[in-house]
Every structure is written in C-alpha cells, then in structure tokens.
Length: 105
Image (tube, rainbow, N blue to C red; front, side):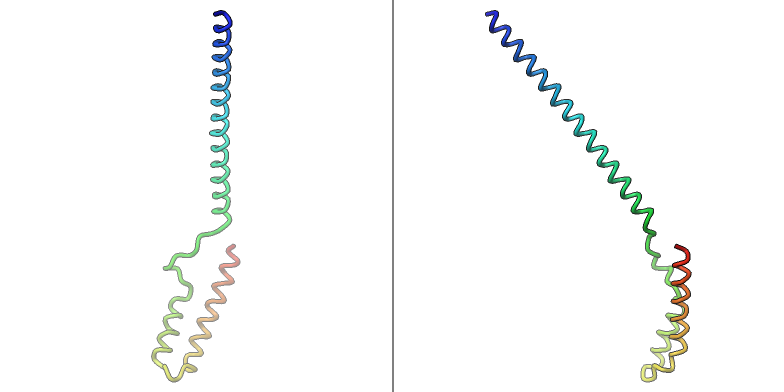
C-alpha cells in the first residue's frame, strides 16, 4: 500500500512537472508570435516610409496640354503634322514636370 501511494505521488509529481513545462512552452510560443508580429509591423512601416504613394488621378501633369493635343488630332485627322507644336509643348511640359518630381525626392 505504501509503495502504491509513493507511485501515485510520483506520477502526480510527473504530471505537474509536464503541465508546468507545457504551460511554459505555450507562453514562450505566444511571446515569440508577438515578437514576430511586431517585426512584421515594423518592416511594413519601414516599407511605407521608403515609398511614396502614387499620385492621385486628379493630379495628372500637363492635363490642359494633353487635352489640346487630343483636340488638335481630332480636328486634323488627315494632317497630324499640324499638331507638332502642341505635341512639342506637351513633351516639354512632361520633361519639366518629371525633372521637378525627381528633385522633390
């Protein structure tokens, strides 16, 4: 009877040991998962800071000149060379806008 009681106590001690160890493992896993989530969030924030968002649709450069070129081509479908001055103005506007955008970076 005494041996049986000792064995039961030993089994109870082992069971408690493994319960504590399992709880510690679970706590460690949760801690590591939180660290991983924080690292992902930090990396995402860093990427957001590195890249500027694309310009909105309403901020098209040289929009008025683009409309003039389209209008000129529509008005002169058989004589596109008549629109060369408008195209040149539009091209220069785009080059100027691009250089200003690059300087802003």
